[in-house]
Length: 175
Image (cartoon, rainbow, N blue to C red; front, side, top):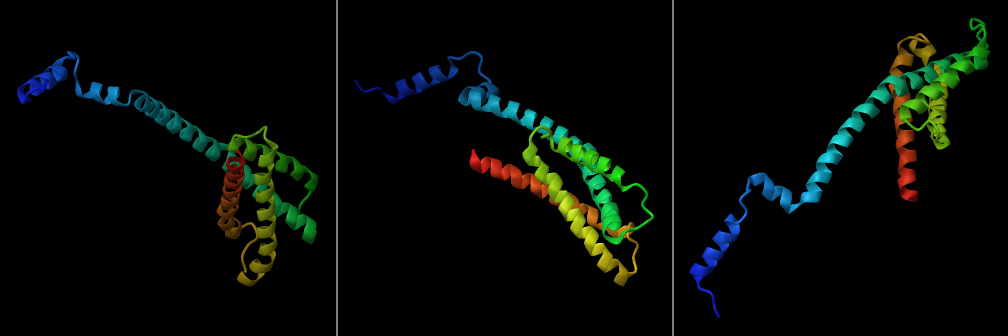
């Protein structure tokens, strides 16, 4: 039997008003219940993780890279040019170890040794910049530990960030 238009409207009206607990939120939640709940939980977890990651980068990674950079400048000055103003250069290896620890802890991957590539890239970039100081500062009549070293410190930090991202991208390609 064919239903009339009036019967269809009545059926739709009854079906629409059958649920007494109707609200605009219940429609949205019932539509994609699990997706909405997962999204709200994931967003709060991501925002909390981003704050923690930023805090670790700011409190540990950046001081660690700075320490590695300046110790590399001092060691390059002593080892290549035999600057006698530097007393005990063996103590610098303690500072390199501390800088490596701070850098690795700031990354958050202290136990994974593949992230030592970040420390190595920071040391290599610092050494290359330290070598360039000896050729550029004479022409520009600048100071070795003056503003020139502070200008290049953000570049070394970016090298550390780029090395970490490169290692993370290799990890995602493999798995």
